[in-house]
Amino acid sequence: MTTPRLPREDLAAALAARRELGPDYDDAFIETVVDRIEEALDARAGSAPAQRRRPAPAAAPARPDRDHSLALAVLSLLAAIPLTAITALNAGLGGLIFTLVMIVLLNVTYAFRPRR
Image (cartoon, rainbow, N blue to C red; front, side, top):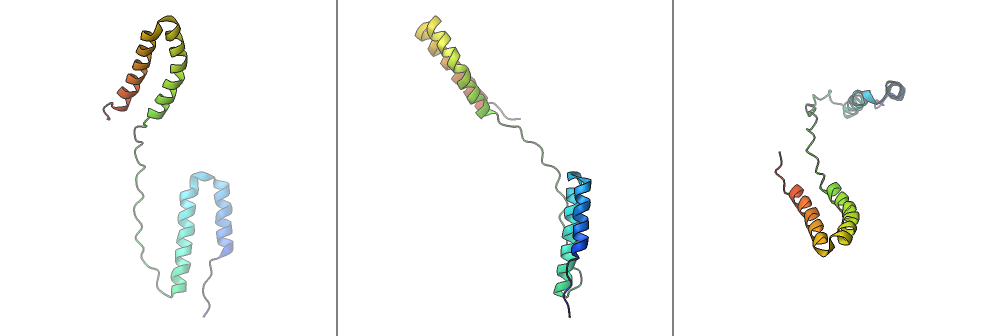
């Protein structure tokens, strides 16, 4: 008894069709290839095609609110360089401390803001 093989020509043709259709049809292509592989494996095992229950495709996950804390911290550091130079020259130590406290307060407020 010979074991059935996956028809390479069919898979090659499916791959060529996938290239022509573009990336929009990747899911359909993958489903087709998986179905053919499952059929070949079922035939090799000598069993009738098993009724495989596929999970329903999950809905696209909702995009979580992106956390921009790192970006805010980097921008705060970039802004702190000229701000500290300006305030240190024009307002002295008091202005420098005030500027740095405001930058830190901005970052802390953002980090602990209520989430929606």
